[in-house]
Image (cartoon, rainbow, N blue to C red):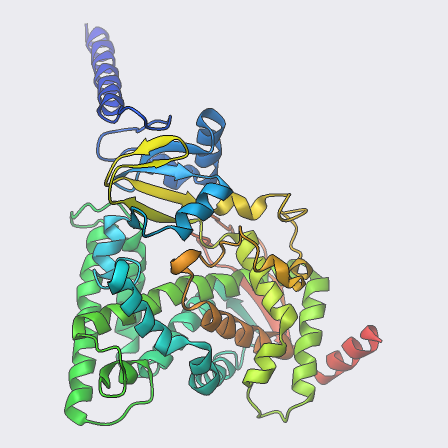
Length: 476
């Protein structure tokens, strides 16, 4: 009897699950939609998407083609894996498309962040952001601060076992905070860093506001960070001192044609820190990994940076001309970003029913422009799974129509050149000061974020003058 009850219970659960799945499919079965599956009510296929990542996308594409429907991160979503269509979507934001990032990301990063706004507001906020991180600002102010920080951050690494993931995360956050408000060494840094790491985890989570969820912790972290930044702004207004940093520039409305409210200033700061942290830290970590695994590329990179150091006294900083001369370094950064796929894609939302690829996409649906597979297209990148920085020395590759590593259209990453400057300076001091080898045994995940769950550990030793002589002899 007990066994029969168990069997009946299992059958009942299976029937309920089947009915829920069926109901959710019928609920989204609208005329004109592309093929696909919608998964469970509320959760959709988020679990499969986050756990399986690229394999989930490949399986769906094999079943339904390069344009299919799904339900991920709390939203009914159309996934586009077609390069031509992706380019069209990114270049035509004004034609019924606006940013469509998940609610969790919008709630935690703020309604005034540049990824959330569109139209004239986006143009204004982007202008305000570019005024802080333009090539001119990098040349005149930011590069000197970056150099000072990197030189200090990479001191005393010799004869150490370093968790390079931890070090690059700390580096990216400290560097941003130094440029924004000079708080990398203040009492505010440690509490800010603790809350910021919670914020990052919360941005890629289901928007379930229950105690213990990443969303709840991330949203609370945002509140705590806002309180810290408000206090900092008030202290600066009270002191009336002039500060030569990004926050100081945003607060000087008389000198800045982009006059922002305190709320907008705070969201700009959070946006700069968040976007720079993820890309700079991960690119730096993976560059260390790929260079270790490809000694020829490391030798070429080191040769470029030793040539720069030979023109300088030991205490001389990296300047703008040095940065512009780092052609192979830029190639290493691009190839690292491509091969590691640090950014998998971007999201848009429809503002009206619109036709795409012969299908009708309802108003309010998300479109996930999934660019990951483009990075491994053998027609665009021969031997796509090989780390080959030399391919980027052909400048035409950087300007080709399917180059989405830094976004595209009006949403091209405004901090692209600042991020490249930061990683380039990091690599300069790394390769001219040190050699390194991996300890081994560390797991590396590529989705939904590139990360080493238990860290990525390297053994570091000094790169000496005799090493320089040997390298020079080998290059003759």
